[in-house]
Amino acid sequence: MMRLDNIIAVRASKTIYRDGDKAIKVFDSNYSKANVLNEALNHARVEETGLNIPKIYEVTTIDGKWAIVLEYIEGKTLAKLIQENPEKLDEYLELFVDLQMEVHSKKAPLLNNLKEKMHRKRSASGLDATTRYELHTRLGGMPDHDKVCHGDFIPSNIIIRNDGTPFILDWSHATQGNASADVARTYLLFMLREYAYFADKYLNLFCKKSDTARQYVQKWIPIVAAEQSVMKNPEERELLLKWVDVVEYE
Image (cartoon, rainbow, N blue to C red):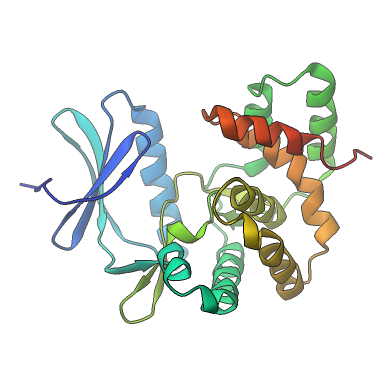
């Protein structure tokens, strides 16, 4: 019998508990079964790449709510470490970028295709037909890749175990596709949250370490912003829609 008396995190539509060496992610009763199963499947597929991620133990229901049971990783998130040791920001950013590049070095051929997901989301974005056409044209012209993309790669989704080993959490948005789209998303997430002050530093470091042109990542920003704007956060949506027009279309 799993114990649900130790809450370690509360997120939109889910609560995460710790029971000994297990983390139990319990979704709200109205949360889509298909999305829970898709998240578990994504996680299992990424686990097979050999990346350091918590092992998935089971998918179950608890009091009528869907739940995913995972290995509990003892440690601190990178977000917490940055907050506690601001003078080590450069060191933490190096680690962050190295981890993201390691993710992109992997292949998981059964993950959903990033471009296809973007096409679906863009259709639901509520943008006018002209803008949707411009985004469709731009996305179609971007190179097709098949790298593992995390989809929500931010410091709070990285936990540093007590022995110093980093683990990457939350694979619900994982896809396979172009790494620069994943980087553009991290950049936008930084700009929307408390990480805005080092967003440009992050982008410059990633481009330097991966030998990627900054302009190439920037070409993805309007496309990613349009997709991200579908998320149900009115304040973020308003900011994201400004990004849709930030970069001149060619």
